[in-house]
Amino acid sequence: MAVSICSFNVNSIRSRIDLILRWLTEKRDVDILCFQETKCEADQFPGDKLSDLGYHIAINGQKRLNGVAICSKLPIEMVKTEFGNDILDREKRLIEAKVGNTVILNCYIPRGGPEGEERHTYKMAFFDALTEYTRSLLEQYEKIVLLGDFNVALRDADVYDVEVFEGAIGFLSSEKERLNNLLAAGLSDCYRRLHPDEKAFTWWDYRSAGIWRDEGMRIDYILANPTLCSELESIDVDLWTRRRRSPTPSDHAPVVATFREF
Image (cartoon, rainbow, N blue to C red; front, side, top):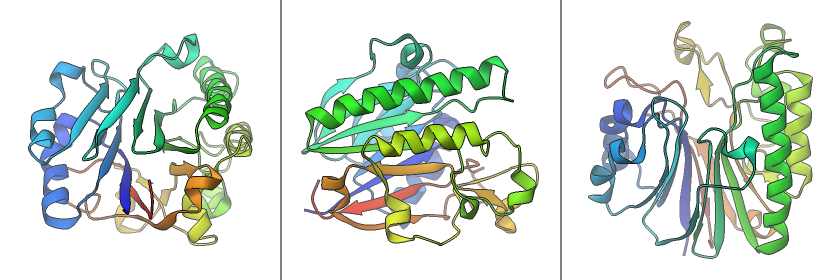
C-alpha cells in the first residue's frame, strides 16, 4: 500500500491549523504529517482538529519555541521523545515513532549562528549527536526515514543565488559538512534521487516577499535509507499553503513523498 509522508515546518501550529486543515481537505490527502516548530506544549496542540480527520498524534512540545509532532492515519507505535543525550534533549527538537514497518525520526535542527558563536557550536553538536544516533537506528531497523527542517541548503542548486547566500547562516561550509556526514551514515536525499538537478525551494523570507519571485532555499528534507528509498514513488514541494495570503502561511512549504511500501 502506497503511503504519503510530509515534512512541514509550520512556524506555530496554532497559527497555521486552519490553513493546514484547508490544505488537507481541499488540496491534498496526506497519510503522515511531520510538523516542526509547533511552538506549543502538548496540551495546547490542536490535536482534536487533526483527530477529526483520522490522525493519531504524537507530540514533543515546548512552550513558545521549537516543538515537533507526528500525526498519522496509520497506527503509531514506539513513540520516543527523550534520547538520553544532553544535546538532543536540551530543546524539544526531535521525535521518533514507528509507523508500519518504518521508523520515522522527525527533527528540527537549530538555525545556528555565525561561526564561533554559541548557537553555531550547538548546531554542529546537534548534527554530530543526530548522526551518531541515526547510525544506531540504521543498525537496528530495516526502514528508516529522517525528515524535517535541517536549516542547511546543501548545494548551489538549493539556493536561488549563490552570491546572495555566500557566508550566510544555512549555507556555511561547516553546516554542509555536517549534513553530508549525516547522509554518509547511510541515507539518501529523496528529493535529489528523483530530481537530481532541479531548483526547488522550501523556505522563503517573509520580509522580502521572496515567494513571489521564488527567491528561496531548500532547507527541508526527507532522507531515507536504501531499503526505503527503493520504494520512493514521488516527491515534491507543495506550494499551495505558502502562496496563500489568508490565513497567513508559514515561511516554509511542505515536502511530500510517496512510498510504494512503508
